Image (cartoon, rainbow, N blue to C red):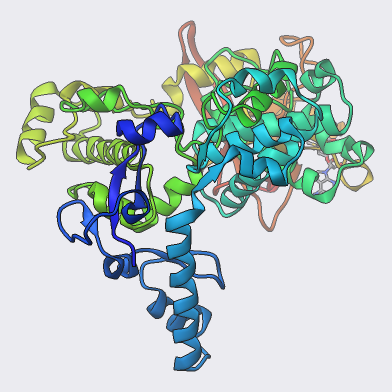
Length: 549
Ligand SMILES: C[S@@+](CC[C@H](N)C(=O)[O-])C[C@H]1O[C@@H](n2cnc3c(N)ncnc32)[C@H](O)[C@@H]1O
């Protein structure tokens, strides 16, 4: 039996051999290195303790805090007690073997299996990025790699596992961090450029209409198509929502984080490649774009530590094991390592980062009164809490406050959308013989949101009745108003088609309804007919209103 210790590889004995720049903590069999007595004490754990640690179930490949309980409840719930014992022993033995031997590899040993040096270097850097330790590794490999790129498409294969994980999360309705969304988009661009031979400028010009109408011509695999559709339905809408007033997505398929068209898809593919095929850059699967715990009073050290290198998969597993709570403490280093998370510092800081966000929202909830919260009130709310560390600053809380939406009649952004006929998150779709053109949502709308207007000429009731009798199709009427949208383009927007006039009819399940508002334009009040979402509208849904109301 070995005696195990939490052994710092920063220690000069090991660092001189392992060339590691980071302080990595790991459970090592000390008897393998020194002939130590089998001590159990501070910093040392015995094999008995190891058995209580996380053990991977070899049937489902998931980490388990109690392998016996897991087997009896899940993987071997129909098995006999003897079968479960045997399986538990097998899993424990495998875990112990991994702890003793699994993370340590020598470069020369790997070369025996991987004769091509470039591939071997890539394999080593990949293993290192996942926490494996490579002895006798060449000192120069970060500079060797980029010059020895052999297969341009390799990045698609290397990044695939992360992308599939992001896809799975998005398809399940979960959010992923911004940096992961960017990686996902870059991967989709890389599919078009590397796999389908599109030029960078073709990808830049690739439009939503192209995607909706011509995707068959790309001859994609089902999986590729699913990935692009996932980008379209889950990531592009977020970019649109981030779009600043006055910006324009130009109907392009690929948008940057701020909702504007990409300028350099080739560069994106290069960045994707640099991230996945080199070991010296940030981890693309990281759970957050950067460390943003700037609001904590006591996080001087935390600020200097990046959580970029923490893969999302790993952070998700960590969160499941140690959920972030408002008043809890992050797990100790010992518990972390015992639970199978050797990257303690990154997890610790990310846990605190998430807790800080929770605390900021909690304080906002305590002081929210519609108007901007007052400094003194925020301070009072903070003083009531018993948070000694990781406490948000008053400024951090004030900065996180979001002003409530103005009334529809007073909304500057709505007035500019009406004036410029620029409505976010909509596209025309041709339903051909079925019903002609229609309007679909390119981002989700919430119940009550204004989706667009019914743009046309306001005319009197009598004039309206006359025009309707002559067969005008693009027409809105209520008790005392008439809006004729027959003219396209209209006199005020000579190069634009408006959306409202293309919204088709549905009596049984409409999702928008027109409503008249007197908008308080700076030049004076103006009547407008706005379409309001009757319920939440998903990306890809057609907008429909009941012409009979
Ligand atoms: C205000 S327009 C709607 C937009 C129109 N589809 C277009 O291509 O611009 C009204 C016309 O669209 C067509 N339409 C609207 N809703 C329809 C539906 N549910 N089924 C078939 N045609 C429909 C009818 O021709 C109708 O006269």
